[in-house]
Amino acid sequence: MSHENKGVNEYITDALFDLLKVKELNKISILELIKKAGVCRSSFYRNYFYLEDVIRIYLDDVFERILSLTSINEIRNQIKSFFYELLQEREKLGILAKRNLLHLLDKPIYRFCVSQMTNFGAQANEYKSYLYAGSSTFLIRGWIRNDFKESPERLAEISSDTFRVYIP
Image (cartoon, rainbow, N blue to C red; front, side, top):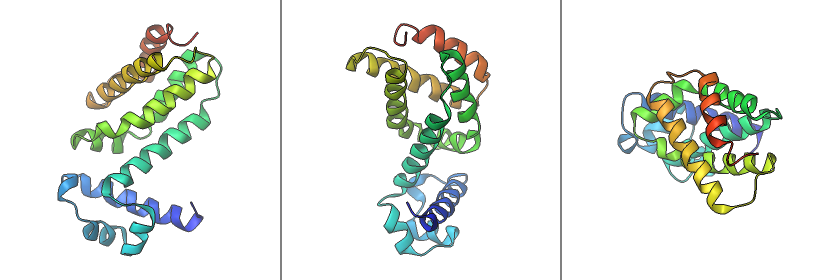
């Protein structure tokens, strides 16, 4: 993605989340979004096909950023760092919860979990990956739906104790 596109994508992403504060995704038009973002229609279609793509790319970027920051070797500290980073996205994740769009977290969380299992030397077992990622997805969704009530430390404790079976 070019530097120019990165700026355009940020405008589009911010505008979409502003619109999601007041209306459902299926009630937002691309024309409305590009007007709010202050970009032209071609800028949207150069980067996206659908409005959901804006959210998917935003979430992919969040998880890529978290993955690049989580180089801590001790699992509990790494998981705590992960939850702290997610907490930085509290407002946007809360909007996704309000609009019943948390299902869009599934694929980025799965990719993140598989990557982490590999980094920690867990057995390459497809079903363990599914179980770990599925459990993580629902834990994260629940945390977001509960407005981030538990601390990242508490979630790291729960996660590392629970997932010790999957990650040595």
